[in-house]
Length: 309
Image (cartoon, rainbow, N blue to C red; front, top):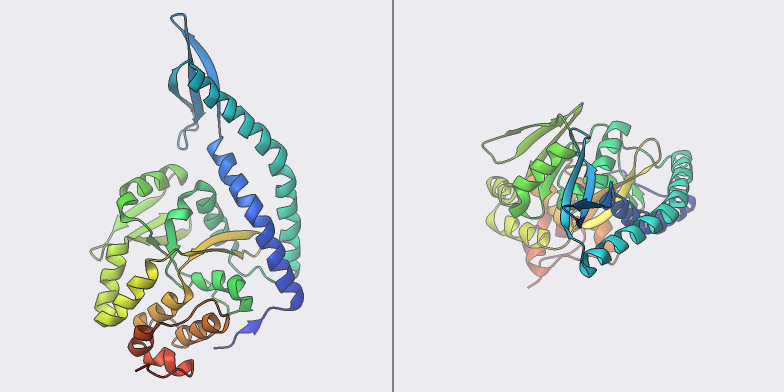
């Protein structure tokens, strides 16, 4: 597979975006939590604190009582107002820096993800729902590009497929999706995957159990076991760039897990698994375990590794 290393300038820019994103993303999450406000209301001579925010679907103001005025409730109010003040001060300069960096990303030809896809993934990240999903399709390759500072062959229309990190929140997540993306439609297949559509964007969400069950139909027991063990670890929080140059957050699997998945599924370019495994191991951050080498000899052969006795 043809892969091109980033130039020194591109690598430097990616590091700068990583540093900025580490400060910007938490502030964006904080800002999201602070939408709306708090106010005191007097009811029958007693003050109550209310938290209000716009309904994500109707946009109408919706409020909830946090309880009658006490020292504890006053502390909640004070902390909320303090957080809001800090975010209002800190976020604007970072937003300006993100816009500036986006222009540089575009000039350096780092933005290759279709803009509509990038906007959708950005909204998914801003809603907080992206933190519960890990990419399991070729879309992950865009995330690995910035992890390994290499450019993979272009994928014009990457499939949007995600796996839930925690099956217990499946119902709640779909409810939140419907709120964050008004008009989204969903249909569950016999395989367990849920096919969704939002405007012109089509995507799939699998529970972990259903995703592993699907792999069992495609691979051998030891192969699926190795992949499952890898997927138990934390995903890699990274980003890519859309064609406007703006950073787009992505959670991708351990690259060794993805290389094994590519080998088992076979529908992805046959060279993808070995290429990604080679990059991962050469980085010094990842290595194949003994059982993985024995179970995936095609990967081991590509890495000049033989079965360990």
